[in-house]
Amino acid sequence: MILQDMIGSIVLAGVSLVGLIFLVVISQAGKPADEAASRKAAHSAGVFQAWLFVVLLVGFVGGSWATLRSLPIPVQTADLGADQVVEVLGGMWYWVLTPDTVPAGSLIEFRVTSADVNHGFGIYGPEGHLLTQTQAMPEYTNRLLYTFDQPGTYTVHCLEYCGIGHAPMKTTFQVTATGGN
Ligand code: CUA
Image (cartoon, rainbow, N blue to C red; front, side, top):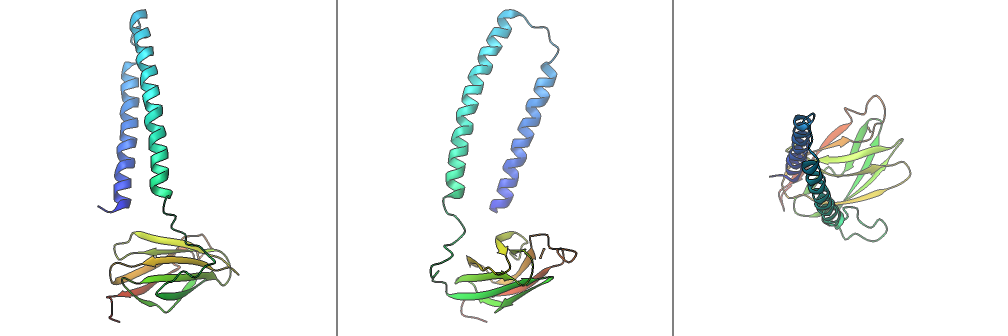
């Protein structure tokens, strides 16, 4: 299962759980309380809160570590040691990739800049999932490293609102099988 679909399912499960808790709370509301039972309930709620806090804390720290450990943004000043460099120019409203064909399995460095305003350079795979992205900024070059696993037709979409032509601001490029062209 693709990571984005997996995260989508986890979010859906979490939202459903919250909804279920709401339904339980609503169904319990309005019932008469007796003192011993409500003291017991308050104690259980306290224990539950303490456990919930621990679980959320561990989840937050663990999740942050797991997802931020490998920052996808390479060092911008050093030689990145890429196999091939692709110059990327974004403008209102077009993309120019030079060259527009790259081999699969090679480390590609995209040098991304803009001719006018800020654009968002987002690369989508043949299945339509966002793979990687960076900003296309005027008078500045952002460097993005990526290795394509599969040959195919990849699409670039603009991910930063840049005027009336923002939505159709896209292009495609080819990833060829290793050694082919
Ligand atoms: Cu370019 Cu939005």
